[in-house]
Image (tube, rainbow, N blue to C red):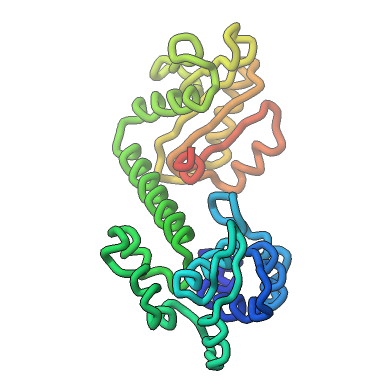
Length: 280
């Protein structure tokens, strides 16, 4: 969880203020109370608009929604219609008791909530998420788990790639570019150069079926950083081909001088290092 998300109150901290703002007995909605609660917690514009990794909903609205759902399950709020809810008599009694905080532990005193959270009502994944819900909503926990799985997978892929031969990596890079939509098909769109005769070029991608626009590739399966001299060799090879576009990929990373160099030259050269390669 990044620093911005940590400044946004977790969904359990939202529970009591949300219930307090429904004490007027009127029907409310999540979106209506979102701005009111954001003002209550003093959230900045950036904190209000911070999106979940899915990009489909803001973090704060997601937490408001789950605070509402959990209190509905405990009988403190009642769903009137889709997206609309109202405080219950039990909810009023809780507020009258001058409670200082409402959270999952507090809600467990209500039998409906215990039934909702009981192990026989939830699968193994829900049981694991229970351990995280002090700061994350179930949706956030799922997305965090997905992100971790993806990061572990990409790191493992790079580890495996580094164990393979340089020729394997060159072939992999060519396949990757084709899979990204450059060139079209393996038969007509891309090829590797002959080993030992590439003059700094490992592969060629035809961006169109007629080969009117060509992208040249260089692939380095390295551990050490790739500096400006290696990029200069590649650019020299591109000039020899009268090429306008090149992509340099490595399992390592590029030096600052390498990045500065490609920003000031023609042809256009794109640098893709370990993190970028993992994502692709």
